[in-house]
Length: 162
Image (cartoon, rainbow, N blue to C red; front, side, top):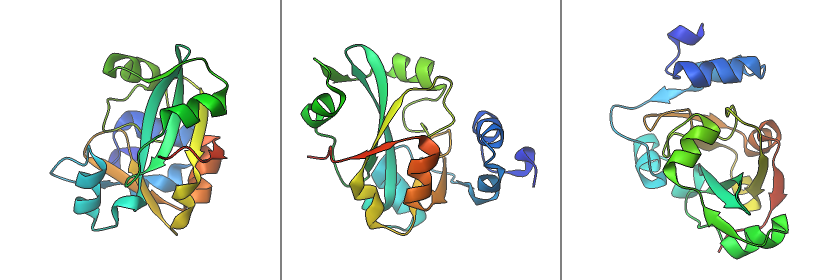
């Protein structure tokens, strides 16, 4: 299967292919309705909310950082701040997310971003055999084994959920 045959958007397909992960492309599923939120994605896929991997961008002392969190949990910003040793952590604005990752909120994948950054992955993702993550648009997702996802994202495993 070529990237043009995949349900993956071109930017994501090019990024994962460059990472040596072209085998992901046949697994990408595109839905007619939005999978922008974790709940929408879980409903479309037919999985548990906690099986969705949210890719959330925060600003730690003004520097973007990616936090991967299970879909049923919220990020505790204070725990992220402590983990990073930052003075201040806030949720990044939509324009910062797009500029930094190359993707819009609701479609940010866990890897394949325009800019490399520090990545934290909450341990709650490891509770499942498979998790689903955004594949570059609010309509496309892909499944992956959580440990593999964390490895490819270059993430540090942490406990940062509320």
